[in-house]
Amino acid sequence: FCARSGQLHYSCTRPALLMTTKHLSFAIQMDPVAGIDIAGDSTFALGLEAQSRGHNLWYYTPDKLSFHEGKITARGQSLQLFDISDAFFKTGPVETRSLDEFDVVLMRQDPPFDMAYITATHILERLPANTMVVNNPAEVRNAPEKLLVTHYPDLLPATLISRDSDAIHAFWTKHKDIIVKPLFGNGGAGVFRIQPNDQNLNSLLEMFFGNSREPVMVQAYLPAVRNGDKRVILVNGEPVGAVNRIPNAGEARSNFHVGGTAANADLTARDKDICAAIGPELKRRGLLFVGIDIIGDYLTEINVTSPTGIREIQRLSGVDIAALTIDAIEQQHPLHASNGIAR
Image (cartoon, rainbow, N blue to C red):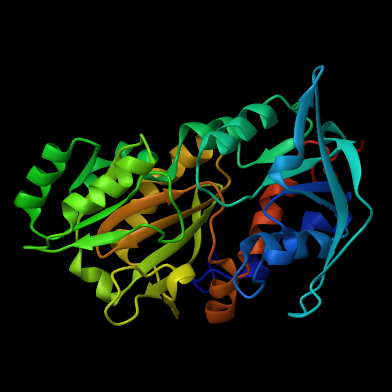
């Protein structure tokens, strides 16, 4: 944030002390790199920025993570990234490495937040302190996006978490127009709008509960979503950029994964109040890179697993959130040259 202009500028935020950078080694735990869409992939943006500073990249998928005799290893490959749509990565030979060899582990695989995901947080939590895991795996485990948000009832729309059909029907009767979604889903998958006189709620709940023992999240439908579902990115508890996601006509969901359109967005006074309310707790928990969702005046989700939106924000507003995030990692890592300590 620039005191001179009153606006956020990357040139104003990049610390001069990074001129004497010690190169860090990054291991990225992510979904298969060949399957990502670099136009909107935040993991790609973070890796590309780290690489541009001379940091080394290595990557593995969560199913290649192992814990044996006190050692955490993964089978993966060195990684080079290129901002070229049809030739955006190059990998080295497959090798098994101990993750405590790395300075930073980026935990960036997509949800669903299932037992496999939770197990990965338990394993990564066992890494020594000199290997920085982003986000803090214990707090990722303790703060799934649709549950962490319930710590802030004054910021939420009317919300119910339950698998009790009677309770869900009572909520629908009261609020008339509702959204039903999986508690641990992502990307807009499995999100349904149930309007008054809709005859599908019973079938929908049968489908949810037949496939899972988990509750669902039910929220009052917010008509303001027609104007967009705003994704705000916070780095180290501070809001650094936003993008508005506009749903297509006839669609209740605005997620980019289901065709939502990106539009530039400024932070309103209400948005800033929401960020001020939750930011200190995010920072305290070690949740360094977080995306929150705001519809109208309401906070609907706090995304801590693998938030997206930073490529869209940079294209629309010029704010380089990948750079701000790598800045924060460098500043916090005890072995980075910016902290005056050499390995």
